[in-house]
Image (cartoon, rainbow, N blue to C red; front, side):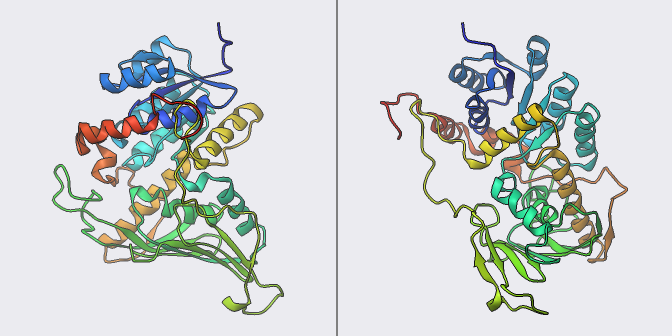
Amino acid sequence: MSEEPKYRVALIGGGRAGPSRAHAFDLHPLCKVVAIADTDPENLELTAGRFGAAAYPSWEALFANERVDIAMPILPVRPNADAVVAAAEAGVKAIFCEKPLTASLADADRMVEACASRGIPLGAGVMVSSHPDYRQAYQLAGDGTIGDLLRINHYGKNNQGGCHGMNLVRKFAQKALVEEVIGRVSGDPCSDHEEAYDDAGSGFGDVGGYIRFANGIEAFLDLGGPINGIEVIGTRGMILNRNNTSLGLELRVAPAPAARPGLADMERVDAGFASLRTEPRRRDSSGWQDPGAPMRAIVGDIIRALEEGGDLEITTGDDLRHALEMSIAARESARRGSRPVALPLEDRSLTMYPERSRWHYKKEVIGRDKYMEQMAAQKIETQRGGEA
């Protein structure tokens, strides 16, 4: 009989994303995936068999029958809030859910409060913002390495409730309070949907604009232009990345203090950042695809918080709540002719539905055949040994 793991992990949602996330926990020596819940019998049978875990047709049945330490709701956005709250009420010790967090500020408040009131760490989203390189970069931006932080420029699409763009900007701004947002959207500012689906005949599209933080930092967000990246600018240096959803950070510092250093004065400094990964993820001898550096970092930080205490360093549910609020504020500004909007937003019923493939079940969106191809790619069931 195998030894009882210190942390019993339950996966809620055994579909295309869930198993690889769960596998990252299974790789940790203190964790074991012991239960799977999914309303889709096909997904449930396949995923529970891969982990040798107990199978349940709902999270209610799972929590009624299992002692769970770490819950992982990896679901379409629509049921995410209810699943997180149910896990918190079931008495788990930690929760990790996927991005975007939810669609409405009221649901985001409900999720964060259900966890915070019980002292439950809530990690959210497999995003590069949780990678150790970015966590180091936030520290470098705040400790004077690039001088006094002045401005953040973000380029590219800012969608999915701001979970990438708005979240990164706020983290580099040291999570300061937001005083004012002036926003633009590429589509219909009166729409609550990122793209047209269900009853929505139009979508608000990309979100951009201007953000002023209480600590004096200003942020400018491009409206889905051709450039992709981020620049964090201080009085004597900058941190940049040419692809803000991946690795490849650079630190550039002017070697000598100057009143107004030019870009030519800023020399690249080796901060130990990883380069942009372009090679495909490898597979282990059991056929599982590598879960990726951000997911491994997420697992490590959640276990650190459980073992040692302290706040999570990865992106949290509260981080994504703030990102959603900033995005909604930008759209509200666009609705008012790009007039400034102050935070916090009083109307917590405001909603931003993400793209259809995030809000709804992907098997229904992309079709069963394509979906099951992606399920099969998570783990090669017949492996002849060695790495693929």
